[in-house]
Image (tube, rainbow, N blue to C red; front, side):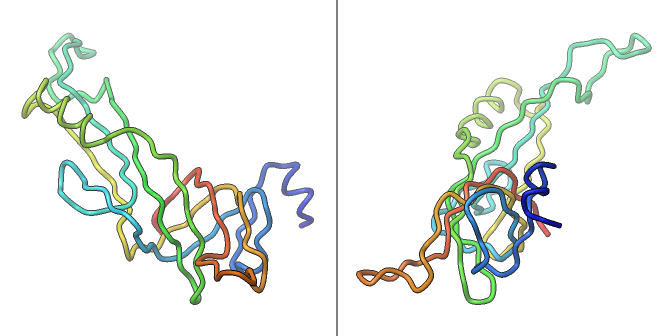
Length: 165
């Protein structure tokens, strides 16, 4: 399908040959290589991106009028990420997720307030994971590189969505 039609319909092309990358929307797959690491505040895992959800104890009555103890009616969500390299076929691209909020700080504040009644769920993207990244190519390194320096990655992608494959 023509690229102009994909743009018109809001579709993002999946690119497997990174020499074919162009500025604009794209989806790529590869293996995560960390440049910096975050720590999961619940499980202690080291990762490059954290998706955090917490459910404080509910004080609302249930449908039948009974108190709901483990209800997930009120949810607190937070996400945090750091730059990392995505590698495939000996090449790499730099991924820039939105930095988000300090997940560890938010979790500790909620834990102090609600204690053991706080329910949490954490999903992490760790080094070595295979992921699909959807976002926008914001910088391309010219083919053949620069005569003055070697660029460490083919492109820079501002990530909008990162998911495990």
